[in-house]
Length: 297
Ligand SMILES: Nc1ncnc2c1ncn2[C@@H]1O[C@H](COP(=O)(O)OP(=O)(O)O)[C@@H](O)[C@H]1O
Ligand SMILES: [Mg+2]
Image 1 (cartoon, rainbow, N blue to C red):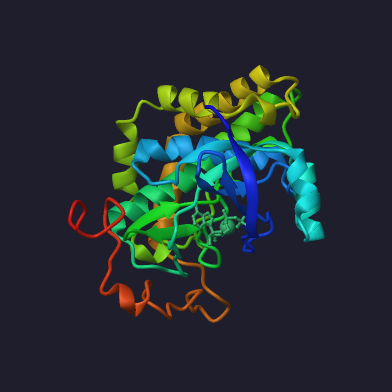
Image 2: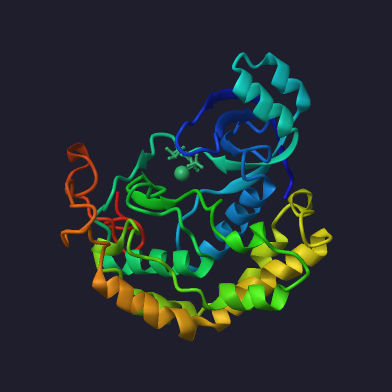
């Protein structure tokens, strides 16, 4: 994909630790830029891109992404020293995610339709995403539709991988149970069997290949020897995870049925305090295609 060039750093988006920044680019686009020089390094960007590609298989919405070239000349003009250091460490290709203006971060335990919740939970289990807890749902509501963001902490296997011991590492990731008790949607009665059935109709070989091929080569040099070996390893881990579905799916279905984590007194954590979106959005229940009344106004 042809990169765009960042021309102005607008503001940091202080939420998690990765310090994404809002930037304008020379295509007149405004992007949430996730920086290669941030704490997790380029692997977080690889996880974002691969997960965005795989989400499409389950009809889940993820904001469009584009590689963003950050020129080194932008750093000195930045008054905030932390941002200046981040820009300097990130000269080169970074991840630009389409900024969704006016999007609302969904709060803990939103009211999401069971079918959509099931697809999201199944997807998070596939990629081992730990960053969709009720504390930090990483979902945006935009034009009344749910968009998934922030997949940099998925695919954790790549933080400790290498050519040695690869078979064992693949086997462990493939069969690992997914800890769903803290998931932001666990109280929405997620229809995981329905999602699993829908996933069986997907050509995952093609989708995995496409998602991995989309990763810019510049982010792929670590751990596996070279970029092509890294791409092959990503495909291998993901296809093994898909092939091992019969190991982790039944456990996922039963954990979802048990519901949210409980505290020492047996109370659900968290107690549902707000039913989701603010009052001014009206009685919104987020439906199967991400909104109520798809195709309406
Ligand atoms: N594409 C986007 N459009 C609008 N706001 C966004 C977008 N991506 C992220 N944000 C906002 O920035 C915050 C931080 O982004 P996120 O990707 O979750 O990074 P991190 O949690 O690693 O800092 C989000 O909670 C959200 O408020
Ligand atoms: Mg986040």
